[in-house]
Length: 432
Image 1 (cartoon, rainbow, N blue to C red):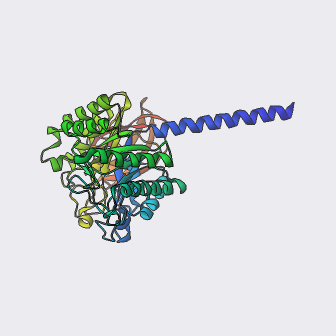
Image 2: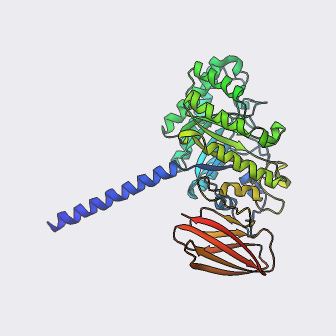
Image 3: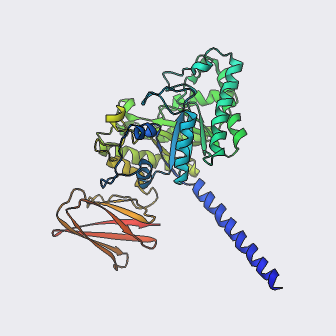
């Protein structure tokens, strides 16, 4: 009887463990995506670029991104790329290495298939050189094999992606001229080959079709009406949104973006995601405001059909890349624009606008809580209180406008009081 009781107890414990595991897996998969496309990162590291967090401490870039709320990475893959640091690399082998690094840090993965040896976008969809002379029939096989090999490799090393994007910004089609939108019958076959290859690797990987100008409803309706007519199979609609390239401030088009995302859900019954976004790195506050607005528009899509937002190459600092729309300064640190991903979309914001205190990550999950005192210098006494007014922690900062505090607090809302040489300011944050 005792052996049976012990066995029964072990079974109950095992059942509870697996229940907890699957509930946790569901929670992770349902997590709102806050992402970064980081295709340049390996080459930045290879050339000796150093990354620093906002306190000036040198850290691995992925950790800095994670500390800023990033939970997903997007990785482009090219077929036979060159060794050019800007326009090359991103080979299958390199992508696998980066995906594994990100997965080991608890991040989710999106793979962006360009089906080219370098950049593919609305202005160019050049076939890989090795495929250039192939018949359309062979091109279908090429696309299937390449897609399958990349995804199967990632799955085999423990870095299975959550999403596979079949083509990059393809309002005019891909693998021109064969897969141009002037020949939808062939484009549909190519897209479906990508879908089939993805499903052959793992049916849980969701397939994305991605267009630029996410604020243009007519652009999206034209493409996806045709896709429906030609029975294209996919799970998710991805959009790029760059007010910088649209030539106007985000305030002129942000409502169009939100309306278009809602229309895609209603019209086609698909989930949506902004898979590329970016703003001028020199206009930090404007880019921050734009990101918060985009995050909120996606979060507001009904029935949780808006899955998230991914910043394109936030780490791609201009002195290295020549790219204007990163979130990184010449000092090797992320700009405050990246802090937009620390805004809690359903609760407390990271910034107390009246005081100017900036608190992140918020909500806080333990570890280092970062405090930005908005340039204050001199001696500051920082006190943390619970909602009953009980003093929980106290710190003294000497000429430290920013600090990282190692604290452990129970879940709840907390108030920070700062006395800076007689000037009193307050802020608040949430512990989950």
